[in-house]
Length: 184
Ligand code: PRP
Image (cartoon, rainbow, N blue to C red; front, side, top):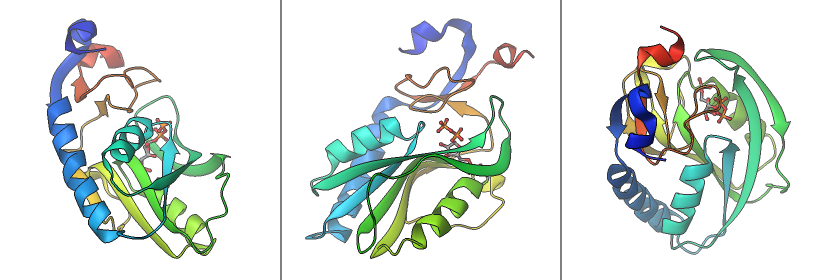
């Protein structure tokens, strides 16, 4: 799916595929340097992190194992509810492991804040976060994020894993939607 397939639904491309690729290469270089010689478990937070996980994992030189969690924080709309529950837990016991959580976006930060304390209680050797996108103006809690791709304005974004009502996840770029899509 690309810009042309979006017709009038796309307002603008915020971050292009090339910019995402370049940023993932930068992040992967830092992660490779920081975890040299270590076994790393990368944990993707479904569903949004699927694209970042797939592309970051393939850019890394570090051999990683992969696991997935699904938590819910949003309904079908665009507002964070702050309510987090586990829809799918890890298959792996993370105690004593170097764990890197991979996220597509940090909005209010409520999901990750909850996830951090949940995973920390399982006794990993280390626990860090890699997020492609972060909205500093939307933060409701402070989170220490070691690897951040882009700080973006507090606008609703779709693409590269991010959805609106489950659509647009398969765009190769991150963009904003035209108001009519929201029923405006
Ligand atoms: C998105 C995103 C993060 C979370 C961030 O997931 O992937 O997990 O929201 O929001 P927060 O910082 O305000 O908590 P979402 O719940 O929309 O699920 P999805 O990944 O399946 O689309």
